[in-house]
Length: 264
Image (spheres, rainbow, N blue to C red):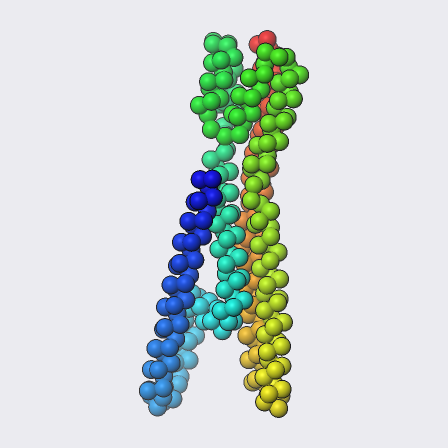
């Protein structure tokens, strides 16, 4: 429940930042438009410097300009997919990093506790150690009095529970990976329909009219693909992290059973 509140708060924070940024962008565009109307003669006479200034625009300014040209409708939805996907990915990365345990040290501490203080001392070591590996060790040690077979069953059962916790939220990230380019394609199709409507209303196939409409329509696809690439990178990193933790869990569980058999 605490993680859900953190995720909701993070999402609201990013949304407020985006809305404030968009408000500032549109206000800036209106101010620049008014200034261009009042200073039209100066703009025309200084055409070459303006072209150089546009060429030297920063990457952030270009992204904002293209975002506005693509339209706030579908571009905003694609951006929302990026925000939600990144929030989930960052939450998973933090959780997985906190779940990483030095299994060699834990096994050494558990074995030393078993030899000096018995099962209760080993359980105390696991209780004071964070991570899914320590939780699996605790469940196995808790059933050690019932035999090795029950220890193995307990480790396998609770290991499945821990794997489910590690993979929590990954289905939503994969949803946003698939949803972002699809929304981009939909925006492109709708933009193309609007471009053809403009051609029909004008009654003439003007190259500038066609090129401008197609450019605006394709912007949503570009941003959708960019969002999918970013989220896919995070998704693959999370999967590799989960696989690494699961492999450590399996190797450490086998070593724990060997230790219990040796100290029986």
